[in-house]
Length: 79
Image 1 (cartoon, helix red, strand yellow):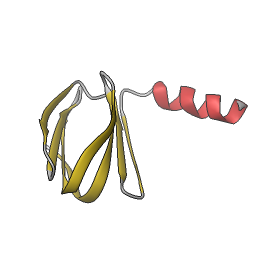
Image 2 (cartoon, rainbow, N blue to C red):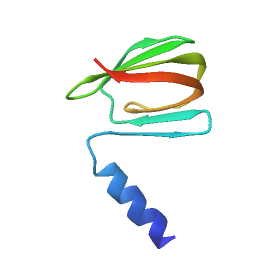
Image 3 (cartoon, helix red, strand yellow):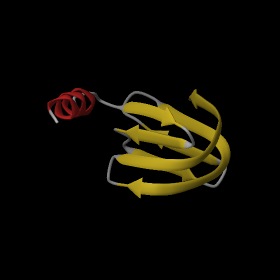
Image 4 (spheres, rainbow, N blue to C red):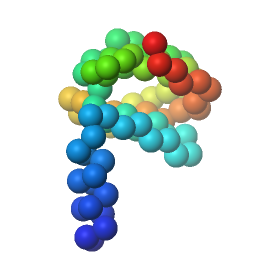
């Protein structure tokens, strides 16, 4: 359990982080969601805007600054 807490503390100490696995996209630290559609999502972070393009996006979990999406990712870019 100690390793889990260490990793969690390390990640949550960051302004933001984005991680991908299988068909999941996890974004922590966004300030606002500009667009959330089945094939496109746009998130405003403190220093940049992130656009995600793909297919079949659906929200699995959402909090005030964290989201977990499921879908097929094609492209991710900084706007």
